[in-house]
Length: 152
Image (cartoon, rainbow, N blue to C red; front, top):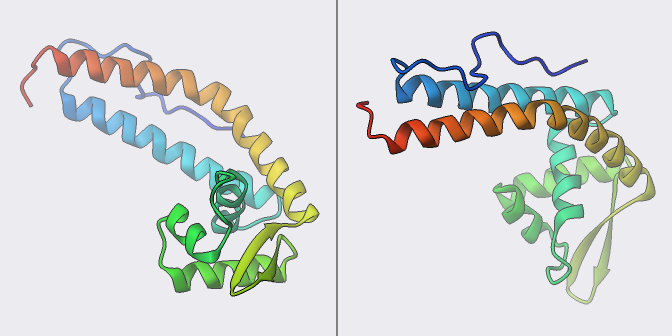
């Protein structure tokens, strides 16, 4: 499975006649394709995309933030009850483990969850090495094009 850049995506080759809408469309389309690839990479690593996002959020929480379901819901920009259900499914797959500390319930990554996350992250990083520079160039073109005051 490889991330492919569509033929119409700008390799910084937009003509002067290109509109901001075309730039924005290309950037949004490229991000969408990368996110679709991310979902496929997560599945290939043996995890559902939303569970991958949970594990990534859990691993990425600052040390100053306790890994509670509320903190994870905020990190995932998700409703609390949806996050709790997501944690339930991840726990059933042995990706995370809950532990009670006083009145709080903390969520921790298991060894299995860490291994699965590492596999999925590695795939994403490989593709980001390819897709990242193209996206950066397109964003630079959008900013450059937009700063010239072209009509919408």
